[in-house]
Image 1 (cartoon, rainbow, N blue to C red):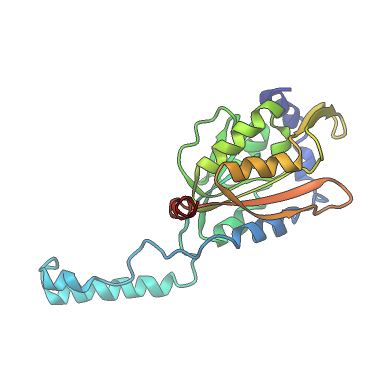
Image 2 (cartoon, one colour; image 1 turned 60 degrees about the vertical axis):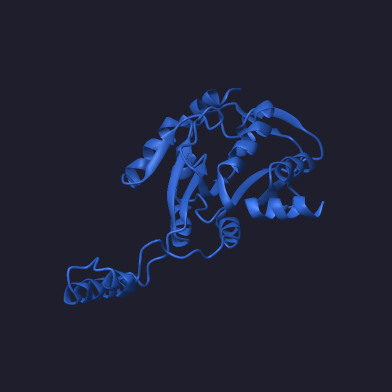
Length: 256
């Protein structure tokens, strides 16, 4: 099945995620753990007026500069409880629940979602009209920027087997230095693919095998932070990887 066909299948079963009994906490623990690996970077917004501004005459006079400083101090006080901005987050196969948005935004990230199901996105955007959502196949989608955090919860296994390796490399490449990638997969011993109709329509699943996923991520410049069979004895597996910084690559090469 192509991603577009999978999207059409999901278009017919959005009710499975909007029913009251759906577990809205599913995956939240994994997101919290993944986000904990992000460095605590400072806000880009200045807290005070630089002292050089007075020395260089960049303010018209001292009183004007003090007024600006007081205004900034008031703004700082009103924003003290707001999370510091760390960049952007991309949620692949975001679906319609928007349940990961609060935990991502509490980490100081600007949330963006992408899904191939039009009906899923219609629900998501109706709830969060001010947020950015992309309706596209992530395999062919031109990722618009680098992200501090990229996630794919219970969606990566719908990627065609032959496209999983290039997509993983693409995602790591679009992480900021020290950015984090979280995805769930089938932690199988070997690669394989199949379809089933458990949810109603025929849906495709594939896995490269846990060992191969780890190999690809390391080769792509990632540091594997966490691997967990979180629903053992089922094969549902969480992988968290962090992109190595350019400086770390240089240091490693110099020691070889």
